[in-house]
Each structure stands twice: as structure tokens, then as C-alpha cells.
Length: 123
Image 1: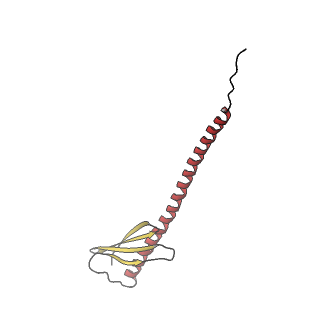
Image 2: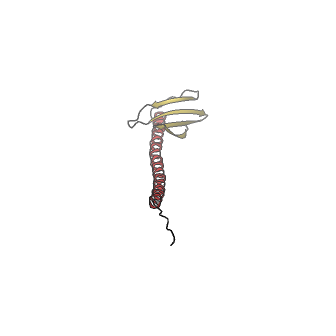
Image 3: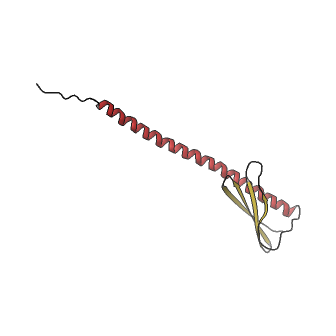
């Protein structure tokens, strides 16, 4: 009569391998979801920084056109800056002259993200 070996614990080992595989797949999926959420948050920060730079550019153009702001004859940095626009964003405006045009560069920032816009103005 042939002897039958008892294979005890095989089911337990197989279950452990299957659960480990499921755990690895779940952790990888969670990592992808978290990366997507972080990217989405940074995109929102980027939008707020862009809108802050637009606000700075609009302000300097308003000052130049309507309030007859006299720009110094030398190129300078940070002619206008606002520390907080009410939502935590801020801007600073630099300019450079090249006769007869003036180029304004506004840099907006929000939570470490910076965006800039540039415009040329002819007084």
C-alpha cells in the first residue's frame, strides 16, 4: 500500500502569498492616487500664482496709464509689490526700458509656486 504524505500548511502558505500580492497591488494603486492628488493641488497653487502675477501686471499698467506713474530712468526690480492679496498670494513687478518701450514683468507666488507674466508698454 503506497504511503500518502501529509501536506499540512500548504493552504496557509498559499493564502499568505495571495494576500501579499493583493497588498502590494493596493499599495501601488494608493501611491498613484496620492501622486495625482498632489499634482492636482500644485495645479491649483499654480493657478493662484498666475492670477497674482496678472494682478500685479494690471496694477502697474493702471499706474502707468491712469495715474501717470513716472518710472525711473534705470531698469529696476520690485517697483510694485504686495505681500498678501487676501488669499495668501503675492506679487512683485520688475521693469526694463528699451526706448520707447517699457517691459513689465510681474511674478506671482502662492505657497512656494511662482508664475510670471510679461507685457510691453509704450508710454
